Length: 136
Image 1 (cartoon, rainbow, N blue to C red):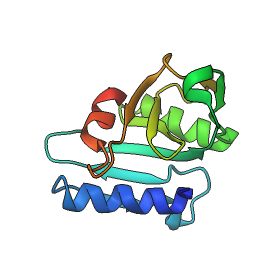
Image 2: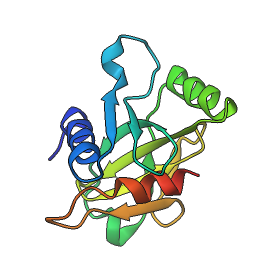
Image 3: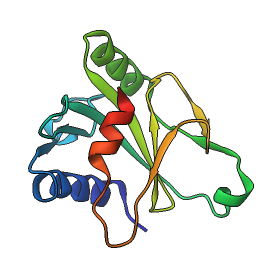
Image 4: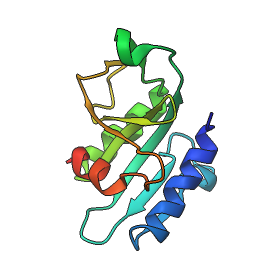
């Protein structure tokens, strides 16, 4: 199972090597509430991403709610970025293969099928361009 830090590292590497883009871990800037990641791919707007990792056994067949798990400060920061015209969202890696895109920073729970999502296929790069597109 991937940790959040491992996943963020993989996303940055994929932005560079698979898309010819750029990425930086913003959480390393020591500013509380800032999103984990800033991604820039050629032809796309810059995207501020708060990354979360969740493991829910059997949820793909049974449904159910997934906790978004952002802090109040993270919600406020994402809201401010969006108000300034930026792209900002929470990406939730579910069971190491499904990425949910939550564009409402105030949302606390989501259900599979009710939000935009992408599946990472084995041996393929993270679908970063498609995820950023779903943030618009």
